[in-house]
Image (cartoon, rainbow, N blue to C red; front, side, top):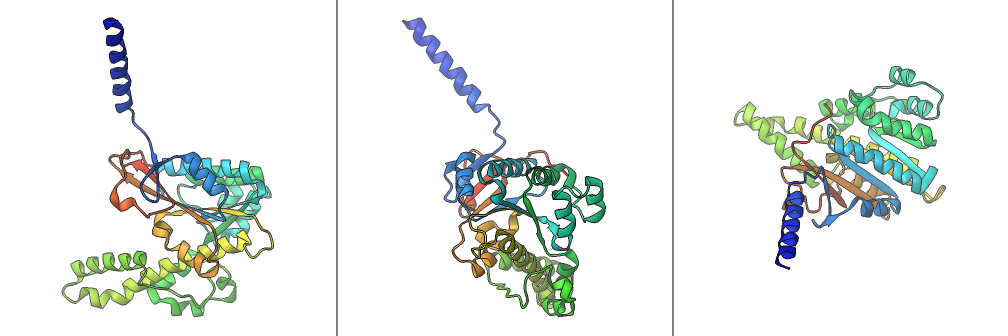
Amino acid sequence: LNNMKLLVILAATVALTAFRSDKPAYQFYTQTGKTTSYEKLLKEATGADVVLFGELHNNPICHWFELQLAKDLTAQRGTYLVLGAEMFEADNQQALSRYVSGQTSATEFADEARLWPNYDTDYRPIVDLARDKKLTFAATNVPRRYASLVARQGLAALDTVSATGKQHMAKLPLTVDLTLPGYKAMLDMMGIHGGATSGVDGPQAMMPQVENFARAQALKDATMARFILENGRFDGTKPGRTVLHFNGDYHSKNFEGIVWYLRQQQPNLKIVTISSVEADDVSRPQKDWKGLGTFILAIPADMTKTY
């Protein structure tokens, strides 16, 4: 009997040691900081109108989960699933649609569209999934030349854009609330930086330029919201669609950015957000993760990067 007890204790010790030595590549948490699972995320996403996946652009775990979620939602929703991404600018929509519909080759698509440097490794698998499953894929981001124009000259500069150009951005006039925490944090961060480089009067002198940078960010958020809504067709013409959208985490964390602009037009949408964070220890949530998103995807800080 004593030998049996000893064996049980040894087995338990080995099991505990093995568990403690495990190296989890991720952990999901709820908005309130409780441990949760991918299965629960998938269930919530399946019943949502809009799912915003806030990624870390060079994180392989984010990209892997984006592909898994796209696959699993396709299995659940079929062609009622619409994909969309910040990584494609709205004036490249025709090129994206031609490729997804099988009209052009991958080489032709690369020649026709402005693709991110990490497209082949990080986004092409999702685009090819849309091509294979005949899904709609929306190019949602504002063309970068218009964001750059606002960053340099302010929102008034958009009045000089052609009628065709205005079809590729948020509808004007654009409302920007710089008191929203996300934009305010951007202003505070850049204001401090300006003071460090420009002397005593630096922050005040740089304020218009800094504010324009935040307005350019808002233009991106509002444009993505516009094309999410238009492709989701939440006006009742095609009920039941789910839009799965991929964007940098800053564009949707704390339910701001894209979420704020979606709510201005469709306050009753069911929106699920995923916010990605990195930490040395993903086995326990940090206080400042609470409220970042409907789900928080915690990834080890030393995870290998895609670029």
